[in-house]
Length: 231
Image 1 (cartoon, rainbow, N blue to C red):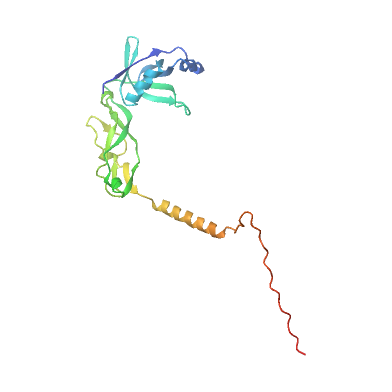
Image 2 (cartoon, rainbow, N blue to C red; image 1 turned 90 degrees about the vertical axis):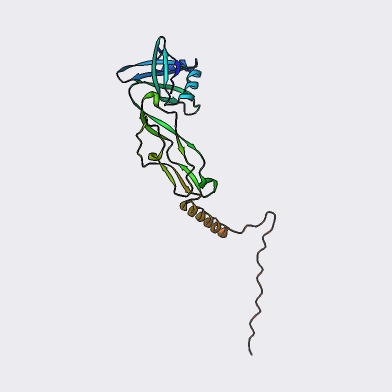
């Protein structure tokens, strides 16, 4: 994968004062690596957003610091929990001749016959796997072909993924990536039945209410004839 260029500048402002950078649409960050001293940097937020949307955490980024160009991966991005605005970014400088590990997203492709035939539902159990490869060989994603999933219980494990030869998958091979599950699980079916029974019981035990505006009439006792006395 060709490196995406991104301009950066050494950062002087640190600590709590970095909020000043964000008001000027600058994103604080740091670049570090094996045997490399950490360097605080700042990047224009719109440019970083565009690069991150393309590269993610597996695409190779070429950080331009003046006349210096550093190959790096986006290692960690801090995001505001409410606004989803980027707060900070970590870059990991890499050696293009040394393999690195990274988490690669999984992309579902194709259509499962079990879903189209309404036999079952598709459950995605993993959305990424850990791989090892040269920085230039890291893929944007790995495909999960599901067109052979036709019955409930059909699965695709990590070991069944189609992976380029230059990439080694480190995630345990017997872990299930996708699976065809029942349209409704036995547990869910039992819960629905229990809820229906509770509703019926509650309805049967509900007190009878008098319609609004109606007057409730007390029952009239039937007079009892006096007993006859024999003379």
